[in-house]
Length: 335
Image 1 (spheres, one colour):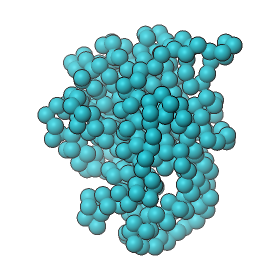
Image 2 (cartoon, rainbow, N blue to C red):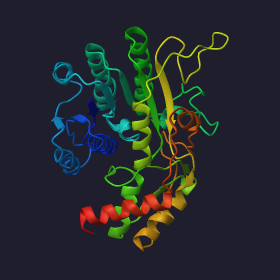
Image 3 (tube, helix red, strand yellow):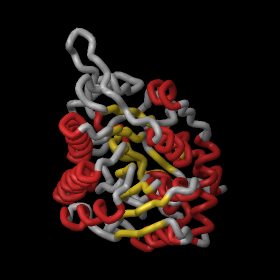
Image 4 (tube, rainbow, N blue to C red):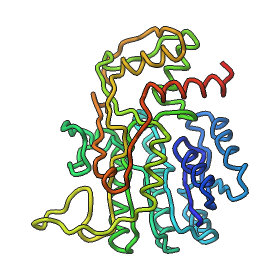
């Protein structure tokens, strides 16, 4: 079938598009190669997809409603995986407008495109950051997520509510996936693993926030892709509410669902750094710093719903995942 993947030059989107192409689907990749980080990495990711004759690239900005509508009308995809977004928690402090254009307007044009051609399932990226001030762990989709701590998280929570409204009004089956700290080969240069590896190889100190007293549910990219593909084949249905109180993870009136997608095995930040040092065979110089604005001390995904509904089982230990990233980094950058 024809599947549209937004953010196809991005980290997760590129891996998803590649997996779908390998499975025999026709993939339409939408990405505008924004210069938020090195566009040469985005170009190299895209080259992996262009090797497949079933891949079509549309280099457009999703905030352009006319161009987005044209892409939907020309290709008429049956399913959509919407992963394009302005990423980065801290960048939202510097340039919040970028999140309005990409995350809010971009998601609106995708929803309109899905509505116009009758897409049978929209799967889109949310984030663990929506849990914000929630301190009850592991984080569950059945918990409220109404106190985001950054504008980035607020736009992602807004995406969930926008999608729910379209699922209700236009019967567009929609599934939100709350990603938990995705890492692996071809990752983003602004992510911790990339920054740590780059700095250690250069002999520069790494920044360790909250003095290392942090825990993250690091999730390897292959496990994330497996979860996305499984969800794509499982469109949601409305779920009746008990005693008239809607469950935050489902909807009593719309084909809508929210899932956590993580590893569900939290790792301390200092252990993560140890693994990078082991993979490189080098010791990091650490600069201990206080907690950053908008950050949280820990994340931990409850993935029981995703496992029960789709058979999702993350299988990559963080030790193996870090080794694979370091091997890719050294090969790609010839270091």
